Length: 133
Image 1 (cartoon, rainbow, N blue to C red):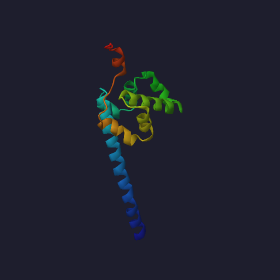
Image 2: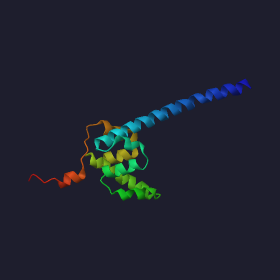
Image 3: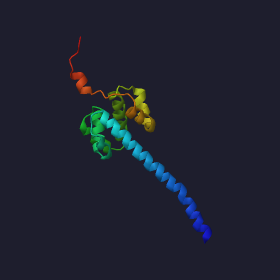
Image 4: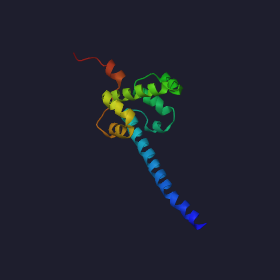
């Protein structure tokens, strides 16, 4: 009887460590997304609201809001997410390689975008400004 009790206590330790690391990662990623949204002139708190955070990402990527409905279609949502992340990278003057990094290594490239020197470039404002030529 005592052997089983100690085995349960010993197995709880790694589980607790896992949950602590997991919640620390989630809090860090919320902070990262908050910074990205603030850089783009969007409300930072929008990153913690489901669906609204996707709408804000669509706005940052300069994609139509109705694309949110494409996110509910299986397999189409994967393609749309890839396009949106590539466009988010371009909106911050990053290349396609950085966008691919955001897709495959988000825990590395999103913090680079948030804490780096990248500045948001609003596509609509850039196109509407008269050229100096």
